[in-house]
Amino acid sequence: MCSLPNAPIVSIVDDDESVRLATASLIRSLGWCVQAYASAEAFLRSPGFVHTACVVCDIQMPGMNGLELQAHLVGSGNPLPIVFVTAFPSDAAKRRASENGARFFLHKPVDAAEFMRCLQSILGSEQTQ
Image 1: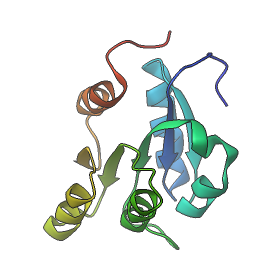
Image 2: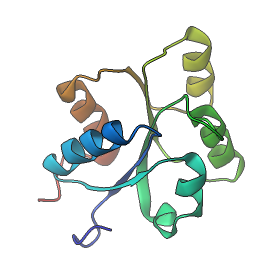
Image 3: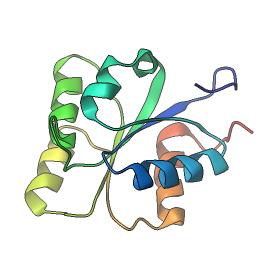
Image 4: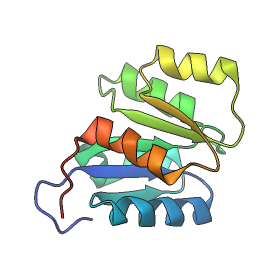
């Protein structure tokens, strides 16, 4: 959990631990709080779920994939802003994600400056540090 009061929390949902750690480190360096989850199911079960301001999510994961997580959030009335990050981009996945309100669809490896612009667009340009 984040020690900064009222800071936006970015939740990372990715089954690849190295991606979670690297993304979390980058987000922290930009001044935002971060929580990381190895699966969509773990994210949905977590108490931090209710404090999430933005989700950074892989598409291809075991169990519930990123698009299914997005559909679940939309269906439950909680359409959180999502930045999809995938190593396997497809026009069909991008179209489906966009139709359900995904804010950004990035390809791995992600350019740090582009990623920062995406988060600033969603969370605002003011950093919490």
